Image (cartoon, rainbow, N blue to C red; front, side):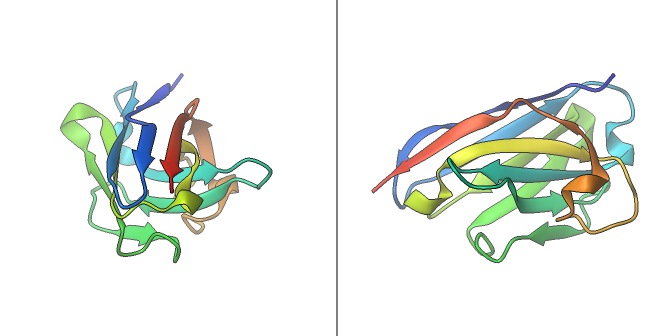
Length: 125
């Protein structure tokens, strides 16, 4: 069983920064791609960023490109999301997830098999 635990959420003013962390249990973390998703109130969950097993390839939603950076540390079984220049529309619960299928786009939620419980990010204007 794999457990994913997010942390680092909170309240920040527009233009500020936050760094989210996701700690994974299990010995095979480095074998899998990882992703960050978010869900705002009344909206569907959406893709934010993804990273392949080595960290050599990253993928971003257009809405966060240039502001957010995904990274990972396989020695620490962790993946991170550095969020800069935050906007009120970034307010959401942020989830990390393990990409269980090697094929398929990182933005496709159906390719992920384990999800964390989420961490709230609130950006005030």
